[in-house]
Image (tube, rainbow, N blue to C red; front, side):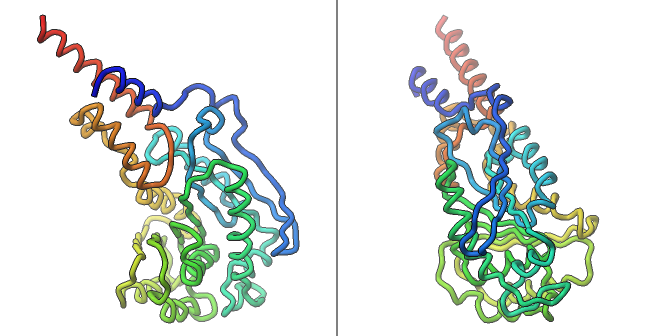
Length: 320
């Protein structure tokens, strides 16, 4: 690749460093929901480079039980994407609960009774809210990529499984951390038996995880996944015996996101074996696969420039 062309492409891809601190990346907004007939709050975290990289697009992570999980997950994402660059930069949308009982009702499938007071589940209404109010709002107000992930823990994980079974096109990835499969005598397992493999949809992924817990009945759901080939569903399960129900969400989500964005991080030992142009081409390709547009990681850019400089110097010495 000619020198001028290489530098031009490289600088189109390089992140603009040093501007993130001037931008408040966290926003808390309240929307009037027609579907839920109440005011609902979203906590939105944008990448530090959102304002400076005006042509970039970002995958969106929709986080259930948002008030409880926001601070832990946002800190983890800062380390995972912004500082260590193991995954691309993402937009985090944490969805507030509006009270424990209301949250449990909306997280519970309609064929079940919610934990606690045993109210009838209303998951279909809440999924309608996510699909027809929350996602359109986020897509119209922020530079989102065509890449979305729904994350839920415990009864929120049950909602994730129910959403996958009933409306798999809603998201690209489903992360269910220690889902409460036990609710209403494993009713979600019966749903899986009826619905798995019956719906035509685009390829989606499911990431299941479990801490050191005996009563979640998750293996009953896994049995249904194992029992039949399921077109266009890639699923993964990870057991964390050293984590409990409360601690498992951060490590499970971290591992799931690394798998979802596998290939974004390339070890330095491999990068050093590539030519600069090959590395640039690789990141152009993986961005197309992930349906995103972002600069290459800053650490990768530094290696590319160093390699290009060394190669130019070597050619110079050989011509002396």
